[in-house]
Length: 360
Image (tube, rainbow, N blue to C red):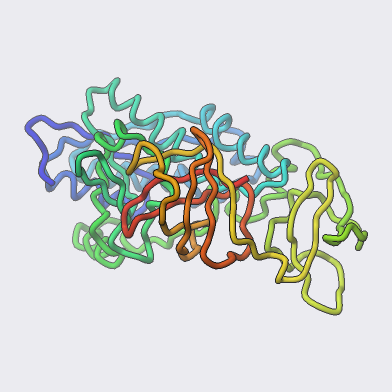
């Protein structure tokens, strides 16, 4: 894709190799780029030890992003979205855990901050497009479509299912047709200092993976203990707060059983964690709310799809029925393990994202 004359694009740059190569490719395509780093964390949180030095928008990341942008001849700016991030991502994340859900904050961040806020800022700065380093593709076929990235191991279309037609019409995803190995090779050839930077697998604001500690520190409130109970109501012992558990969890229960036992559900109203054997983890259907559709205006019920219930879940054949303007029921051909409230279910037709919603 080549740029139209005078096309200016706002490039989200994190300091990582993906966004750096996205900026490089856009420059080669003739776009006039403007590099932007998003400041997502209020000043005091780094000092409280909630994040690591290599976390998103750390000083190291900012300097790397600035170095790459300047090397490409692009102006570079830092946009302070910390209060928006606190409200739309951190507080949603904490509230979801307190309600017994297991949220995916990367989806909220893309929806409300990295893309939602950036599209508005792009319009304010006379940029025709926003670009990111996501591994996904945008195509036009009557309507704008979101498609999987060609690198199956890196495809990130799952995180972008909330995009609208207007947003897709102004979004550039230069890495959608590349593999990670190709991206690193391009970065190396360009002399980028982050060409071989290791990727983090953790949530950016909880780099050590201890979500419960983060929530307790953030709210300055210890989680309230309660009962572990069986699916028939029998009490097995005490848990250390529902924020420490998620459906499918086996380790860290602190109890001993003659057979493996798993978290099968969380009852926030009664502050209970439900335990059961693995067979009790499987379900052949789910309901989802906050529905967003991309490939269609509404789901022609029933519709055959493949559905993914978490990012690393292999999508499975299913039938979907839209039960309301923003609700749907997904019925799987085969029962799925650990369908989890708060996670996103994303629907596909081959490599095209139909849409998705939040499991409840």
